[in-house]
Length: 161
Image 1 (cartoon, rainbow, N blue to C red):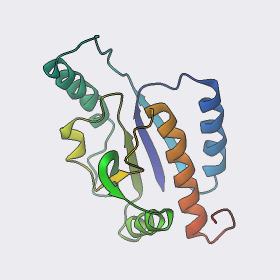
Image 2: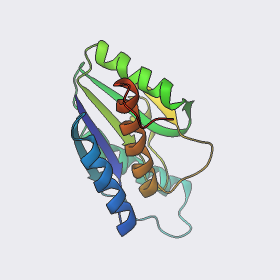
Image 3: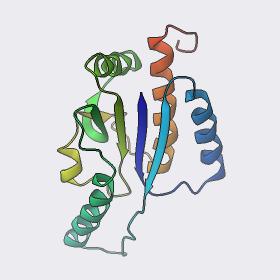
């Protein structure tokens, strides 16, 4: 299975880079992992809602370029308005995708403004990790940990408690 994380913005903090590197290494025996970074757009101070919408649209176009038009792929967008799942439920969802022939799962993390509707509409799952707002850079590390946890749950390996 291919696991692709498409994230708006680059990691800027060393501690996040180290965490991402650790989970990337851990995931090697479970999945092929590709991380794609989409350039985030600079948001001018006091930007109008029209300017913000244009920024979201440009970032969304960047994300959409990396989503293959295949029936063998699933798309998960991280969205505070999405569905909240437990780790076990997320693992079960992932297992269902694999059983239904999905050989690729794309996990999409928006930028500072979130995700454009054109990306959200493509989602097979709108996933909320919390009602809290997390920095999108930190969300990448949290997502990798949860994907790792899902594989551990599916293989009934010790890690998840």
